[in-house]
Image (tube, rainbow, N blue to C red; front, side, top):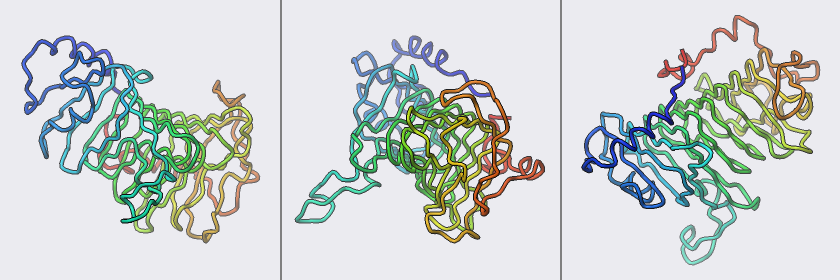
Length: 335
């Protein structure tokens, strides 16, 4: 069962505000933009966390808009950043790839590039985000990452990830991520990278005629992206969306037990991005269409008659063999 955390941590906030500060013990520390918490910024709270903690520490973030560009460094572990209210606790920044900086190439202005545009970069392992929004609020002027992950065993519960192109970058091979009950939106390749990631009961919202995923799964890695029990939605006037295209040759992406809009997903499903067809690992199983792009009940099994010949339809036995425990190896919370 997924955790119900908002009420619990809000009550903890009320209880602990009068207690003495104890940053080095396994407790909760509080952030409030209005000054009523121990810290006014999330970065300040991250800075006081001890390196390589063996206990679970919560940074509780009260409702508000926090304009911060954050890094959770590699020496921080076992931290949970929990928002008071998912839709009203927002960490936001607005870098995009075509912003120029004198720090990239000495002596001249140069674009910062995709991988420096993050709002939140997680380098540490065993990090959890819950009940919070991470946003890249830049205009559509280039790639703009909201969440950039490099750590292993990362979990995201009831979060929103907002942006346009390249919203979520799962940036390190042989790392394992869980997204559960999350909302992810974007335009082009807005879930991309080499990590292994399981998306459970997430809403994936397409804001433009483009591509949802751009996996770059290494050849040696068995699983890439698995979307299970997810809902794909589309914005008005969007009608040509691909499920994915391979950023690298052995891209792995699977949609299982998902609901698609009745119109808007291209009938061929996938794009090859000029990669060898015999290396791309794309598959579907038991997906349905719904009456519109907003949601609703299942209406029919999806028409796969025009899918590209080099994608696969899993058998029931094959689909049953793909479980969250097998794919991620560290998750039991969904059982």
